[in-house]
Image (cartoon, rainbow, N blue to C red; front, side):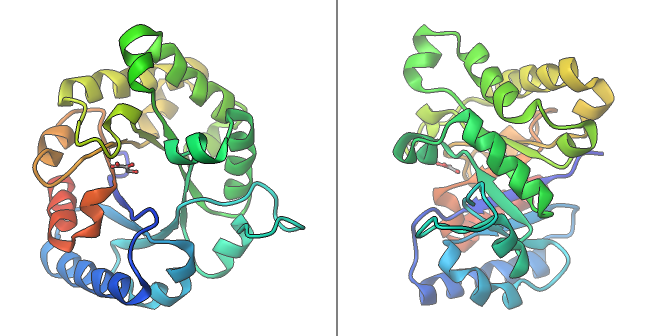
Length: 253
Ligand code: 3PY
């Protein structure tokens, strides 16, 4: 059975107090209302991780960071490493979000190193992939997304790849209000699982959770999650409102 996961990517939002109010609401709602088997990962800005950690009570909630550096330590001003995240009790780290690829120039090769560092330090990478609108309309978008996975993940062993969570986030659906239809999401997730099976075999591919991201929200989550290869969601805007986020969580539980 693949792990069902709903992760909230807060991006660069919320002051410390606003964030703490959101965490408290989400924790209370999840513990009171969610009975099914789902892991809920909160990914606030790194600055707040230590403060929020003690508030994540219950057995469903985990803490995630939005990025880490590929090196363990050194002269990299402003950066945060995987061992540092692990040392404060973080379990997950989002890697290769399209915003980091676009604004910070992250490459598939660099992301391979970040994935290695996360795994070496006992963090679960949530590895993001996805194509632009131009690519979807005019290009080999499937080949493009498969190459992101090949170049950043296919050096891993069978054991390591099963520790990675993949998030398919079409860039044209991020922050645009557009969402992939459930059929488009399922087609891509199925293709990505086939791609993983080609490298690692079907049994391993069946163990890897593939999340959908890109304007998933309280209205469309149930239909997306009903697809056989959609194992959960990486949620942007809707993770900033407790009721909306917990509605998404309940759609997956
Ligand atoms: C979105 O939902 O827009 C996201 O980018 C989630 O990571």
